[in-house]
Image (cartoon, rainbow, N blue to C red; front, side, top):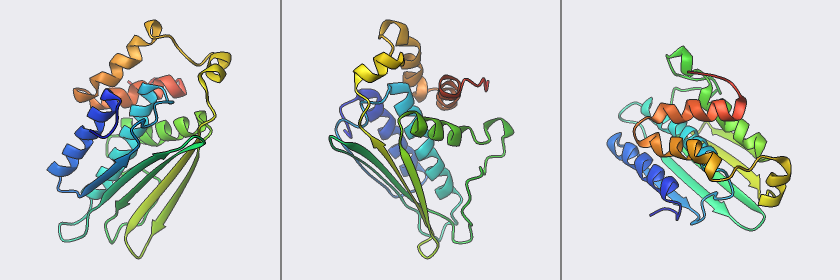
Amino acid sequence: TFCRDEITDAFLMMEKQVCIEKEIPFQIQVSKTCMEWMMPVERIGFLHNLLDNAIEANGRIPEKERKELSFWIEEDSDSCTVKLRNALASKEVFNLSTWKTDGAEHGVGTKIIRAIVEKYHGTSKTFWDKERHSLEQTIVFPIEHPTEKREKEGKILTLANWSGPVFAAGCIWFHRRFLAFTCLTCLCGEKTA
């Protein structure tokens, strides 16, 4: 197992399996608590979009070129650091626009990631290594959001009225895109379906 949260662990195992099927070398190291301070539907939406973008980038790499996806989550009492490094095709010029052909999904993942980083007062840095043909993203969240602060802001929900989003996170095994649209609606207030 990667972490103690069953939904997050199952999701990470599923992403690892996708990488195995697509022959993408996948290295993962996450803390046992793995962002438990974040609401589950947001945590899965964040990880889903971050890793799917890296998997898609590896999918565009020609057969004879190096593929790579390395993912780390390190937490201490003050911060949570998420690092993702993935290979890019040697002829690919990095930019933040999507490669998706489906206009309905254009930029949805980036919006979800950005909304979660902003909500939790995180910082995000992206480094494009032209020599190694790789991209490294580092996202740092301060761990300064105790339950009491979210209760004061009215942003914490009880388990009884939060069963819908928790169920949506569980549906990821069957409906991967459902979660992305659910997260975007929850975080940005936009209807995408």
